[in-house]
Image (tube, rainbow, N blue to C red; front, top):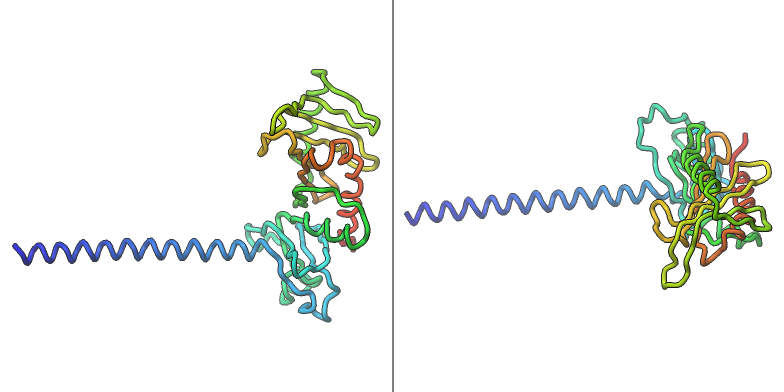
Length: 257
């Protein structure tokens, strides 16, 4: 009887050790995958490692649209990497060159540029809107969120409760600022010369705070833009006036040839 009890204790201990081993192994795998995701989401290329010493720029391919941004050791370029089959990717001129070089643009589904916009604006003396985020996306030719936002704006205008500002912006909805956190839902829209209409949606979607506003539009074929700003930092009218600066800068970093 005593021998059986000892064997049972040994079996329980072995099973417990196996369970702990599996848990530790799973934890290690999760940690490794998390680290890998972090590495893939940041392009830390030093352009001097590129053929010929590079040109100080990091190149990223949003399918057929290639953009370049200045290298910064302190502000690595953020992206959403491509997780589809490699066969769908455009073959770079020099596949053996480090990823991010002009000869091998880093493929991305999305490119996040908030820090780069602020950095370039400061160095070149430009006005940089205080954006919470700024991203460029691969596009199949449609700006889906832009269509959704424009439809919402058109519906809001038919319901009234809209005001027109001297800047040409129409603001619909309501906003109450009588508490610590402002409440309400607002949709604002206005025409931008030579480009898609600007529509900001505030208080809907991922954020329920009316101060957080989201803008989406198809800037050019194959490339959509999305950014977020806060009304306490920059008003709807002022952001509408500053938006052409964002469009001009994004167009300027596209490699045309």
